[in-house]
Length: 223
Image (tube, rainbow, N blue to C red):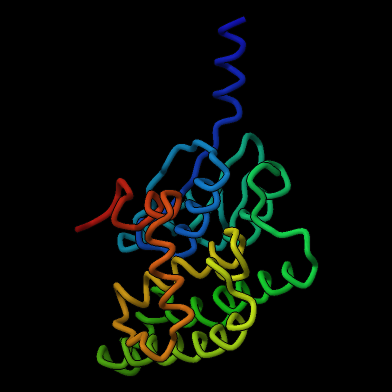
């Protein structure tokens, strides 16, 4: 009986392919932590091009992290993964039941994942550095982030509580926290013009599930 239980636990164990500084991977780490789900961490070094290896492309033909393996299910794209976790593991819900509030959460997540993060990902910044010049990389990233943060401030100012859309942690927070961390740590964004987001950043740093998911706390982190 015990051996069957161990076998079942091993069968159900999740595996996350991640890069420590990837904000998309950061989102999934937060979601897994909030759900209380244990997982194996498989580092993928983006700087060494491991995401383009034949082995990794079998998991994700797009060639990016994160990838989550759950038994026979292989998932990529952070939003798809988080929604999968929400459906399969409904405890500690990541979406509110209230429809207008759910919509705000989806909007905030979309601003981050569609309007901000893709415009400063590694491949695009490298391309800008090659075609325009290395000095333009930071200016481009900062401009993209500020534009998105301006929209998020307007979106959230009438909906926030302790967290982005009230007094519970939901999808919006999972997407905001990594973007705010990158703005502070990597892109030197002056946050005084974004008081709502600045306060959220401070709040996220107090939550254990967020702290454990921080890039600098990952096994492949480079300090």
